[in-house]
Amino acid sequence: RTACGRGPGGGGGAAPCLARVAQVVEDEVVQYVTPFIERHITATDWRRREAATLAFGSILEGPSPKALQPYMADALNLMIRLMRDASVQVKDTAAWTIGRVCEHHILAITAEQWQQMTRALQPGEPPEAEGVLLAGLKDEPRVAANVCSALHNLAEHCEETRNNPTNVLSPLFVDLARALLACTERPDAGERNLRVSAYEALNTTLTNAAEDTKAHIAQLLPVIAGRLEQSFAMQIVSNDDREAQNELQGLLCGTLQVVTQKLGQLDREMADRLMQLFLQVFGSKNSTVQEEALMAVGAVANAVESEFEKYMPHFRPFLCLGLNNYEEHQVCAVAVGVVGDICRALEVKVLPYCEEILQLLLRNLQNPALNRNVKPPILSCFGDIALAVGGNFEAYLQVTMSMLEQAGMTAMDVSNPDLVDYLGQLREGIFEAYTGVLQGLRADNKGPKFTPYLQGAMRLLHQVAESCGHDHVSDDLCRAAVGVVGDLAMTVGPEFTRIAKQEPHKSYLKVLLKEARQSPNEMTQQVGSWATRTVSQ
Image (cartoon, rainbow, N blue to C red; front, side):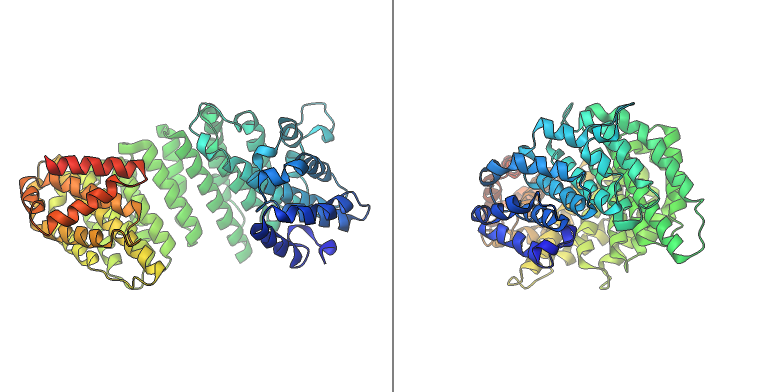
């Protein structure tokens, strides 16, 4: 059965079964599989070569690097050679296997092997001088799609070094970006999900590239914007054409979001151009496109900050449509996130739009048809708005506090782990809302305005403290709760201090603060220590 496999999906059920065995048995599986690989990897029958390649790829997750180390160098050299095999099936599976090596054993790849895989073709050189992964992007769609996955996995490993002056992507960046962009425009890029895979690999490469690539990334911005402009001129004569246009526009908006986030700032002319394009994209009725365009607008808001004000009259209707779209809850969730981006960008300048946005958020919280996972971010969004408008939030204080208190009374079956997680997220969202409200009022010396709502906040703190030690309180929830304790002490002042010294408040606050100070998370420890000092003062 294994010998008749067809690429990564081949081998019938044998390949995924072998992969599961490797995950469970770990190191022990190597001694049983390597003889099969060695026997067939150089066979004249392509089916046997492909089966051996598939077997090697299937055991890469599970065994330790030490167990695979004796075989890795030779095996990867063979994979590189098989990327030029006469059989498409063999090349396909070799590309998939290289992707698995990049995902699970990237440190085993030598500098020479990287060169053999990613070397760019120089003028006058024969095609075989090009690295096998770059060459593979021009191969059959099935091969190219697996190469994209391999490049995505390579870039994923650079996440922790993306803020460094340079990283391993830097010398490869220009050639990788150019090759992936070319791949997205192949006439057959619609096959095997190739266009999507190429844009995903490009986006991960852009996201995790180091500081020394920013000049190159900036050059991509007008290129991608130009592609989005051209997409509106696509000839649409069928539903398939419309779907292809929607997919392309969604991918381009996604890349523009990534580039904008990476650059961190935009000049006025480019910001105008991008916003004009995104507003045009909102004319699509496709939820995926709208999601991507909303996130791209959020990135523009973060980049231009207060200058985003001029776009709000034009963007407001589309933001409200997104917030109203409870049936496609992912669009609604993204719209909620964009409200937070806009609040941070505009600060008090968001005030003219607050009432409408708050009404939509309150309606969503009360809507039983809205997916429950959108509700914690909505609660947190109230904090973003309050922090942005400061003391002006006083006008919305009564209705917001009533809603937060009501949400705080939500009870769940604690024997159901999913419901426990949701309850934790809900409470975390409530505390984030309290934090924004308290800090916003304090900034404009209106802290006493919170006093009538103090008991509601204290009730929720008490509930969370009672859950401490029962695995019902995540570190994030604990940190959010003690953050509110500190903000209450700083904002409400003597009235909070008086209540905090009385029972039962004194006891449960002591439990919460101790839980935070003893957390393994350094940030939670710091917040716990700060809140303890603030309360004691």
